[in-house]
Length: 422
Length: 179
Image (cartoon, rainbow over all chains, first blue to last red; front, side, top):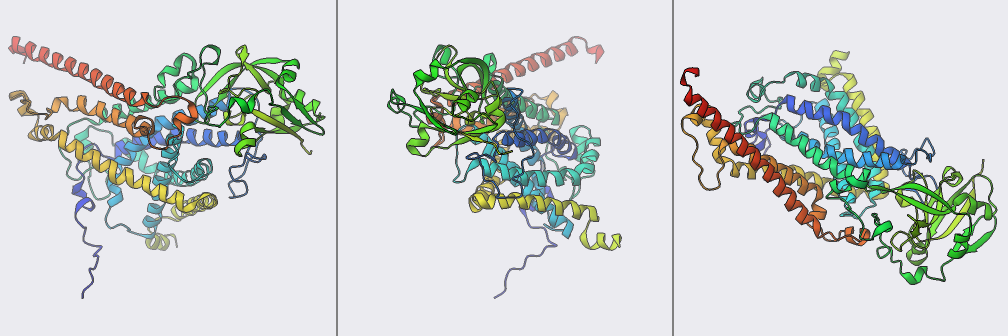
């Protein structure tokens, strides 16, 4: 029996033949221009993503996305408390610019699609290694964009922990993206100089290594219209992110975002997790609810006792990982006052747990010493002049400047202050 | 030395250096993945890649080919024929001049769909409603409405372009000397 032999010198049929690819829109100029946009835009998404991750203070207890798992768990700064909108800005940019670049990424991938089928598949060791790096680039880019976009909609179609997978995936992307920019920068510059109309560019030196079709089909739409569509798509998605991030009168622009909250009046602002989702019932936070405050001594407070303490009111944003944020007027007790009552007067972190933690093992989070020391950090009891509602964290919630929303625990049951050893 | 390296490797030494740095850093990311769920992540990554590269692209391309087949043959026939014999509209085939006005809103609507499909199609096991307390029944209607608005705007633009083209032709006919 004779085994079929793959003859690498003979190009197989179908997409491996250069004349299979007919679109007259593909060409070096289009790819270079889209590449330029991604080269400028993607670093904004990467840097704001890394900063937003640092805002979680992953080295503090309970905050870990997996510390000491990889050499990349390296955090060089602690998280500041000013400006108060810092996290709202970094996460808003991360989500908004990421959304806006998604159509650019898709059309860029489409423009180089024939390259996936180039023949022979490997021309030299250099070519093989570079194709491997491009596979990492395309894979990690789609992974990062698609996972981020679906999670933004509270959809988790995967078995793994999103935050950690997205964080380490970012490093795979950074590596492959950096190499691609370095290796293709010259190609991009040459591509940008080939600008011409569709016919010209399509006819310009088509060959096995050119991005332009060797035998282009008829032109039914100009390249300018394609770019205009990409721009319009970017704008459309940008509004979805920006509307939710800026909020207020602009929230309506985000018609595919969490639009508003069904509460009314002073309580009408979005939540990421309802009481029902957290399995918090009115009974579990009723008259029997007490706040445990632990320091060098342990204390217990009822809600009435907390309301009898000095109250402070501040306007602070609550900024969600999904990219939206909203500024509200919070009233409550300063965290540092509670720390002093528990006998902790020096620099300290605070680890909070919630009624949910006690019920079904929900998570604990830790805020750093900057957050505890800041006068704006509150255990809020009221919002916009009324008592917190159950969905907004009744009986008490943490609110702290520039901190991710998920670190501002609702339904708090315990605050444990730990002095920082200096 | 460099020349020998170049002929056996296929590029300069700097090329290799950049890629070694790339794989080292990417490797550190993969080590992180390994502590999360490497098989799950890699399977998901490959699934997404296949979905986009081997389903979404070919599917949209085939759809485009089917819808605009008439326009394609018109374009292939050359620009001269158009002025001589304006294309007759038959069935759902779309004439060359109308192509962008049909294709652009379809692309934007499709973009919204593939971006927000978990909300628009109310993906099973989505945590949206349980987390936010909001209804996800509104998003399909919003997507339909957005598509309607996009096609409405496009239709107006098309009507305007037809009206302008007709004006030009009439002016050319009334002043034959200017031709």
